Length: 223
Image 1 (cartoon, rainbow, N blue to C red):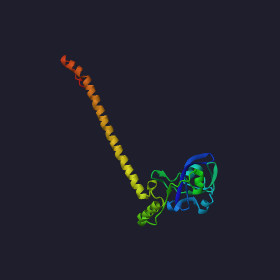
Image 2: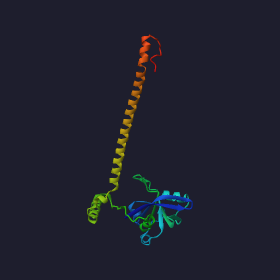
Image 3: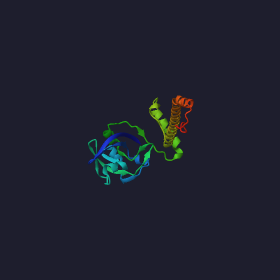
Image 4: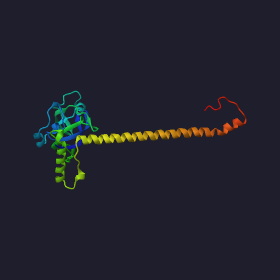
């Protein structure tokens, strides 16, 4: 399932906000395990006909229509009117990216709206986790055959790989923050020590004079 993405401004009445537009096919809902909240999803016919229809993420629907029903309403995207055919249930945030502030359209319509024909991602879904590794090897083999000598231009990964990468990045940031905190404490300690040393050094002469003339002061050594 190919995906084209881009940023677009959507407007409904006075409400106007920038969203991420996803251009895809009718299998997107199934492959990404997403659920409907209202209406229906895209059809293959709408993709072939470049139909001006869109499917909204839950946050997008709230931003543009507040408490109103979004289905069968129209939104302006780049000055062009698109009919809303459905709304997603909240998908939450994954890998730091929200799945709720999106506008989903037929890939042909999204290419026109975003001005991009570059397919940045292709999603695939294995029948079950037991054949996931085999499926990845097959995809890797297909890509190698289709794009010989261009392995640096693409990557094949699954959700587990992405989670491992995010965990590794998180651990690295934790170590970096710990190191920064340690350095801050060390520098702060050295600074306090130097201030105390300077204070005592500045009063050494005064202390010597007071001792020489034998001035008794019970608060003399209080700083």
